[in-house]
Image 1 (cartoon, rainbow, N blue to C red):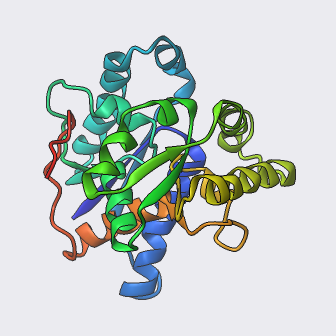
Image 2: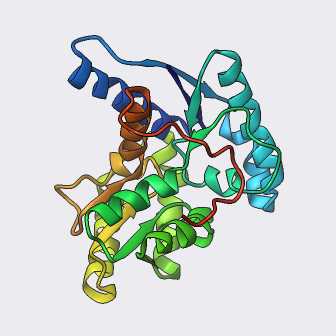
Length: 243
């Protein structure tokens, strides 16, 4: 079975790829992992559509990558980009491959851990968007969002630094400050790092709250599909129905 990674931003996709392969090294033996492909078309080409809110155009752009993965022999895909799921969940023609939905993977883990109020940190699109407003309540968890000034800082750090491979101590401190406030003032019992680059900046040893690392959770879910420990996905894009 071959896994296809639909990359939308380089750092998060690379972390997903490495985690998937390392799961193989850990479980299957040295130098062994299920077959994996990665397709990445430059995010800069579609950012104007994101800024314009043209999610149909973004979906069509992402579908082309999935088509290339399908042509390369992949059996299923996952996209290690939370914001991309806003577009992937838009109604439209079936995507060329079935895939895992990152929002549901994160929500399932939050439920397994017994979380009840989860802070959501991601791009401005994700924090303002529908993915986690659907996925977390679907398993009985309340999503909690940063205030306006915090959201601006979170988004700025993502686009000015994290997606460019810059991980600075001042930005780490700012994220920790925000997470700490969500814990103290909003009674959060977990924080979802749902920009796939954030786990490269915020690790469990510095976070004031238990973290939901969307990148590594998705990679491990994909590995479990490849090794038969998780059901084969059936979602081909579009709205996700409540279970």
